[in-house]
Amino acid sequence: MLDEEILKQLEQADIERAKAYANDLERGLKIVRSYPQGVTIFGSARLDQDNKYCKKARELGQLLAQNGHAVITGGGPGIMEAANHGAFEYGGRSIGLNITLRHEQFPNPYLTDTMQFKYFFARKVMLAMSAKVYVFFPGGFGTLDELSEIIILMQEGKMPKMPVFFFGKSFWRQLDKFFHSKMLPLGLISKNDPKIYKLTDDVNEIVKAANKIGHPPIKTNYYDGFSAQSDIPDLPSHEQLVK
Image (cartoon, rainbow, N blue to C red; front, side):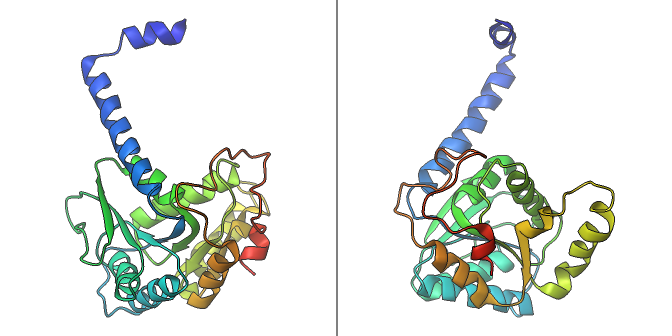
């Protein structure tokens, strides 16, 4: 009853805003269902293509495409462009879930599928739902925001514990150290939480984890019907996938 009364009091601007949110989500879900779950690669839009991390992202994109995995990014320049480039040049599925920003963000030219989002939260939902493996290359606040979102959802059992890689040990080591030396002693995280992710410098390790999961059919999704109490059938444990 209370919910109905609140709905009656909604302002027209709030109704229109809610419709716009729903539109972003509906369009995003349609595109996610149009290809098999792949590997989502996050990272800075500000790095040049000759940067060492961009070179590794391009190599990873190519290897994933060679093994039949779709490559999903935020669709912009930098790390995203490099990963999409690697998949595109091999003839693989290269998806960009883009968003309009004040600077930096424009669709890179190596996309076979693309969608422009208006809202960050809807875009993040799709970057999560579209993947079976997550890779975080060096990035800024946006990358940290996406990283935190994936980690907290897995920590709280709101999504399956799929493989999560922090690529670039020298870049991520201090953050990992902060988790262990500051957050863990205060009880802000549990001892098993850092096991959600793995630091790596090896692109082949990431491809191996994706290969272990395999290739789910189009229109299916590992998150369908998921709950914290249920297991995903035929999916190796998180620990097995990142070994």
